[in-house]
Image (cartoon, rainbow, N blue to C red):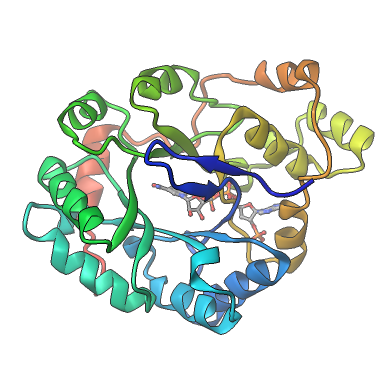
Length: 284
Ligand SMILES: NC(=O)c1ccc[n+]([C@@H]2O[C@H](COP(=O)([O-])OP(=O)(O)OC[C@H]3O[C@@H](n4cnc5c(N)ncnc54)[C@H](OP(=O)(O)O)[C@@H]3O)[C@@H](O)[C@H]2O)c1
């Protein structure tokens, strides 16, 4: 079975599986993890200006020798960069850091400050060919509908916390009218042992000859979620991608769906998030 692609609401095809590099240090650690992944067949990398490792992602993509058009690069603008008129300069700096002519998917990282002005400029960046697809991340308040209704280009994706303990069924209903797809961050609960060791994953793992994490990742794929688990461990990088040769039955999917307890791992209120944001401006 081959890795799967999802056609977004703008017609672009995103690899449904990739690797995230949140909290991976810039330099050798990011470069090595991305190169390891690309060698195994990964074709999708999720980074952000805030992660401060775009340069190493770009360097790994170049060094891999894989044609640029075969690799999907997602990155994200931080709220300090939002504002109509400011975004273009921020995108040009991103392109330079990533050492690329275009960004496959550009997201607004957080739902604060001038996100509406920022979106207008992101639409212009699509028209200019600097960005192929645009989307949002962490918009779960009423700001989600505000942005979607104001947008000429509807967000292609909404990136949020999503895993078997927090499956985001209600959010999926809210974004369905816009054709927006869910991208799951914390797909394996940021490595949470309670989630990973749930007996249902062990049981299904035995049946299919897979690890608990592989069962969770396969569940995401069959739920239609776009995922990019983070790893710097070569064995995990290899195993995480090895999920395209088996299929869970509908009954087995249901036995995982009942784990949805409405429990998040990331629990900051909007006000706390906004306060936290004020302390951080990513370096160019
Ligand atoms: N938009 C946002 O605000 C936002 C927020 C958070 C994350 N994200 C994105 O989502 C991506 C994934 O989220 P995340 O990195 O926080 O969490 P995650 O992918 O759910 O979990 C990563 C953790 O799981 C471990 N792990 C990976 N594969 C494993 C395996 N096969 N067996 C056991 N442990 C394994 C990793 O350790 P090892 O490295 O040792 O394998 C790491 O500690 C991020 O990298 C980022 O791209 C976005």
